Length: 335
Image (cartoon, rainbow, N blue to C red; front, side, top):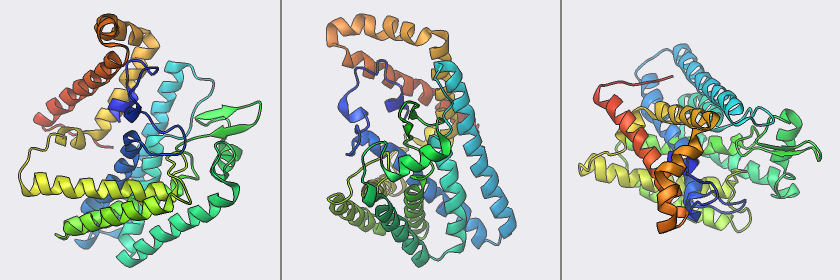
């Protein structure tokens, strides 16, 4: 996410590091659903065992509510800083952390109280129901059902809003959070298999989700902004395969967990990097740093795309150094 969010020059980004313009699924479009899938895995590995160990239900629900609301609040705070830094015409209420927090608030109690078969049934109901809701009005930007409802409820506090036409859109809006909850629940099922020593099921799950998602896309196209049902299955399939492969290589064969430092301080990396971007932009130093350290000497030699990517890679490396330094000292920042 840091890599795709911080190119040196947004006008020169390699295609795989961009979201699909509307329909479609690029490698970048896998990042956010992987986040939500891992939220589900963490629920299965962290929350569910506490309930099985006899933790009080009320205490667990309180802990879930506090954590979920803190994630939402942090997202709202970061958007407040971005509103100030980039001088946008209006504050945006929805975003990545807001969706993660809401999905956690809904999915964690469901994972505690619903049996596996019921969870699978709920996933099917959410995805089929989303198809039924969206299909009649179609999937056109600004005119689909999700955009219309979000605009009616939250305009102008959306990612995109035109006061002249009264049309708006937010890729992390409230309504499209419904199928995103299904992504988290799929992660819950994957995490439960992993916890119970059945990682081979992840391979079958991944292949099945990819096939179902690809077939469904013939009727309901992949679309991250609407979190279409085909997109939810397709991305969950890749997430399950990635989890299976990493478990095999790292947990079973002892390969180094090079991403561990980012994992244990994910909030620090995400929020800290976002604040850094805002401060550089507000101070006018973003363009100066990019021009002096990258574009000024790289562009004549390699063209404009190489320095833009180099800036993003260095930004990721900087924050990898920060979280690795924290990890080496046992520092964890949790909300």
